[in-house]
Image 1: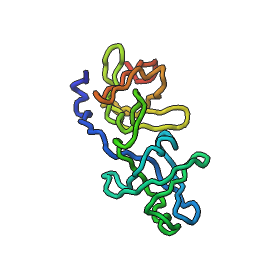
Image 2: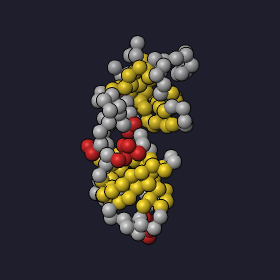
Image 3: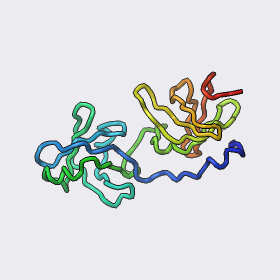
Length: 183
């Protein structure tokens, strides 16, 4: 249950149909391949896609012919891009996928779907605010939670996150001492 005082923070969030996959960093070779910094789970996720998009509306599509790993990036080849000159035009472009084109594991969720979720105490139901951003600095995801009293960073670790229900936009947490400034 959300606090009436926080009701102005909550918006109905419509799940985005087209999700960011990552960014094209550079060209690779002379035949139009590109180096791709992926923000998704990895190369296996990318391999299930047949089409990716250069815009968040799904209007500018590219046919994905191949995906292969190279260290911590992927090398992508598109049907429409056959020269290094064409590939150079894609540098620094963000690629998107249609969420309907990919499978994710049961119980898994897209990070974009967490934005807008209410964060509440799993025992008392007390609301602490709304997730406004998801960051990662290496060891785990960090949720930025906005409330009327300011922003709090919440580590998304198993000892804090009890459950995530993106359908109902709720994240239940076990509040640890010092996590939120309490009186």
